[in-house]
Length: 210
Picture 1 (cartoon, one colour):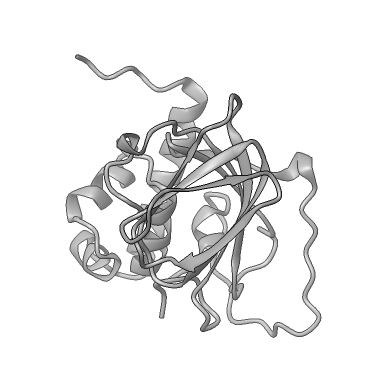
Picture 2 (cartoon, rainbow, N blue to C red; picture 1 turned 45 degrees about the horizontal axis):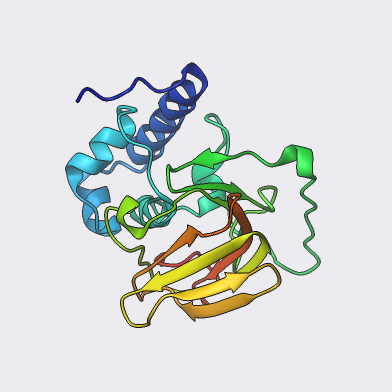
């Protein structure tokens, strides 16, 4: 069956992101394979992303940031944004208004990163819409370095992992776990569930970086 063409807005976003990845890679004088080796991804995957043929999942973005040696904010910032030198963390504050959140559709989830005005954060917070309805919708369970916490805002989700039986979480419930354990979330409520997702590597950089 032929693949459906992506909506114009989605394709434009993919193209802009692909150009951003290529510019970051070339700016660091790295080959596709060098980025792939650092990220733990296939070189063909990096190539597909740069050529707008693949929208990475959230764990894919974390790995890609590691491969490019940038933080997630820099990776997802505007196409012409540049990486800034280290900044002191004392007294930093950033407010994200609801209307300012930008969604990134990764098929199983729509994620909207928060505090995008700050770089080199020690944790990564994201508003997530869980679109997946079955764990089979994932190519593989998500896994990345660091620790992760989810807090269900609306609806109900089921947390799947490679170590525990599925766990159902309703609005107001939360779970904290080792993010290197394979994991995936699916919505089990009538509407797509929403949640707050927080990931940290614990070393001043996003998970998997350093």
